[in-house]
Length: 79
Image 1 (cartoon, rainbow, N blue to C red):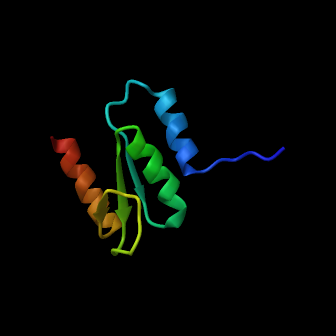
Image 2: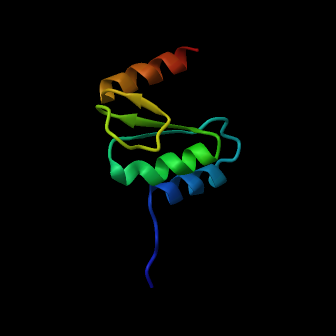
Image 3: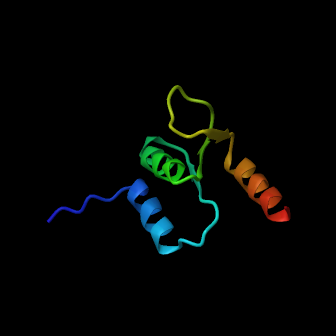
């Protein structure tokens, strides 16, 4: 038995497990995160690529570093 599981499946599972969540955010930094970006954005959430700009990503937003992610989340919690 082979189980197909990726970050997109994980995002979908979490969204189904916590339906009262208002907004899902998914942060990723490499090609393995693309399924997560797709899944979160298809469900109305926000995908954020973390790192220097690269040619192709499905994420709709980008931050330069993990430090910027921390700053963003801090600002989000203040509002």
